[in-house]
Image 1 (cartoon, one colour):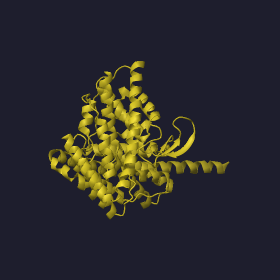
Image 2 (tube, rainbow, N blue to C red):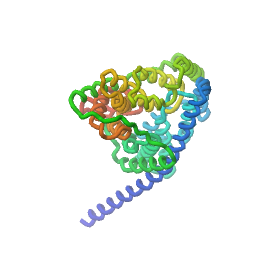
Image 3 (cartoon, rainbow, N blue to C red):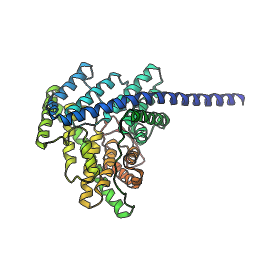
Image 4 (cartoon, rainbow, N blue to C red):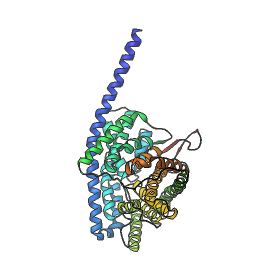
Length: 419
């Protein structure tokens, strides 16, 4: 009996010591990565404003991808897996070199400077993941604890950049394995996420919040309209993922020299920009998203954004595809709302969250990020849209390292990679 009591006391002590350790580490990581995220935020903002006021910078679109490709070659990272490496490192014992953080930081800034159609989340996840992996090695953490540190880092930088700490805390738990969550990392991710966001806010990194007006009272007709929009978003997310995957295959097949490929595709991007006549589809496209949320867009801009983003990623530009997915969802939603006469602004909000859900396979994060960006009053509609979009998007996704652990349609263990 005494041995059992001593064992329980020791077990409880070890458990609480582990909790204290994670609180301390996640808080410190949140402080540090909040600063990193703020610096990165201001860097992106500066180069974007510079490009807008000095449009001649766009002439370097053919060169920018070549320079980035050379950077990765110079640091012996020719087969860079990007965010897929971060995800696979949580699933296995793969290490993320610390140089990844420097590479992705510089290459994403350069990509936004010259006008590539990329986002920021790829940089956020890789920055946070590489720092977490390095700290795990530095302090000789066990393998499972290293994985938690990587998730903590991902949540921290994602939160600092996007200003959505609740969604950021869940994203790293949900994106790794579809159908399950790594709840053991929940508390550390929450602490790091809120800490990093507070630090970034104090350093001037603004959190976006969109006014979408009064949310209509829920009824069956409106719920069906939102479900219809979700179906469209799910199908568009499949199209986006397929084109990204096939674009990379075709690019490598027909232009084997990576430098020539980067130059040619960069030239095509420049040509498309000249034809369009403005920078609507270059960079993250925040102004266009704002116009969609204001209900002012009635075009097929989401298709053009897909083309720009696919060409940018295949060319070798870095940054990520999630912010472009917000653009695509907002544009599709706004057009849908205008066609059906149902609040284009609100439909744009629903579209943003639903396409994000379709390309990441993260319904909980998608619901939370929608609520943080647009307010919780629309949560019933956001939930319906995320649920439908999650099912319609099938097993496609942005990250090929992502595992579909359980089927979306049956209670079956399938353990397959995202397509």
